[in-house]
Image 1: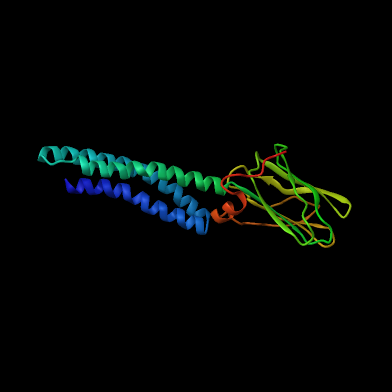
Image 2 (image 1 turned 90 degrees about the vertical axis):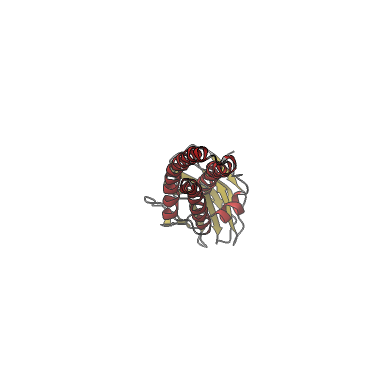
Length: 227
């Protein structure tokens, strides 16, 4: 009888403790490994939930046969088992929200201000950007829609420049950081995945979104809205 109850408690505690540990580790240092591990824990947690319920049913049957009161321990075990559901939902929502945010960094290393800057996603949603002064760096948070190129357009030194921050944006867990540098010569340098771009120098950025970065630039879920 006691072994059945212990199994129910362990079935509830295991996904709670390990899932929380993985979530905390992910907020400190996000990685694909931790993301996959978290997904695996959701599946194992669902199976353990069934195991825990089965163990509780077994415990109730044995307790009734032995004439032992079981409502309080069963209530505690059920609270632990059911408590995993909202906790798991919270972790999933936070991870997906943070992981799928997009950060655009504009660095102006020239002597001219960057003006009339507009960033446009593949759905033709246009996002206006305030002027970027010489020597200034600005970072803003977006949620780009669809799959395709993310374009930019701005005026600096009396000339308009157009191009792509990314040749192709994946819609799920893809590239998240796009950095545009305006050099002293007024040439554009893109830091990001831009595989077929003849108009700007580019480099690969493999940065992962962090919770602290999200809170700093996105606030509590408020991202830039298209014009």
